Length: 458
Image 1 (cartoon, one colour):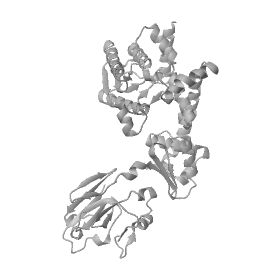
Image 2 (cartoon, one colour):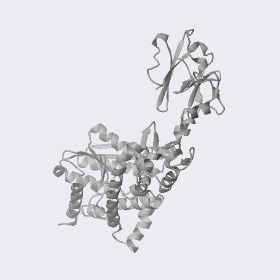
Image 3 (cartoon, one colour):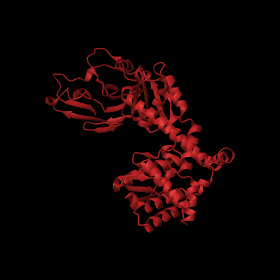
Image 4 (tube, helix red, strand yellow):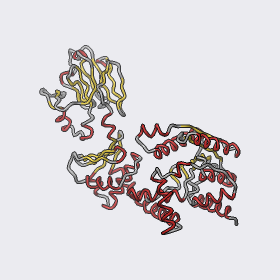
């Protein structure tokens, strides 16, 4: 059997063992024009009838390398056309996106690439998305994650299948792919940026891993792959155990994760770190660094009010019997005062605040907690929506005397992270409504009320 045939059979066996492709699958191939994606497209096209599949190819122009990027796009389009494969393409300003999101070019490119692949797949009925990750990529990923201390998930390497994304050539080394393409006299594009050591992954690929192969283990990539398979199995078992306890230990609402400290401590102590890894990845799609996980474990026994800054602008705070994790950008979703008029409806974060005049006969206090009614005749100035201020006071409904807003929020057991972003509706400097919680006694409706305003938080 020729070396090319051996490589093909190696991929076929891997696909069957990992159950990556089913009959009648419609597969969208991520085609960069590089050797890995060219081999992947060629292989799947050659075995199209055997697998009983349909193919499409997608290319993202990153606009990072001028004419070189345009030539990549042209090459991919012509390759797909030559093989009568439907071709999809899009062009994005990766550099601008990275700057706006505070990401590296590598991270920004990956985020947009998968976003566009999923969009094209959904629009055109593709059941699977195939990427050209190989054994070398897996070794680089594991080593990079090990250096960063990313924990069990990171040491599991690149998964061969996640949701509808498959990686059929993860079993092949880059050398095997290059040899196959050379003997088949197949052309491909070289990304010149991969030859530079500007990125962490490139430095590992070009400097560190070659030395490991030369000095320590020439089959380093195979050894790492075997380790990643073991770690995936161990990690799978741990995640299954954690999933059984997920609902009783954590809840996620309004982009905020609440972890019950008492319930979490009932788990085996060796699982607690992995639990933090799991929920942060699951709900925020962020890979935590080990330092963050260690700090979160320590936070379990800290006093109320203690805070931690985590990766990707996540913040953790310790409450009475819980740890709250949220994106700190959410605490600033109202930065300026907002003037509202009767009839206005304004989206604030995940909620909508509306003010409308209603007939007194339509008042229904049992509708839901976010609805309140006030006497429109008692409102003399403009209605202003803003965050509450330190030292500010109001008269809670049902009380004769005023109370500090801070004391009132404490009595309502509002978590400290939520206290800071609590909104108030004011007029002429006086608080009308602690939004979503309580109106001011002075604005309540009475038998003498002629006009009624409905305040609603939904």
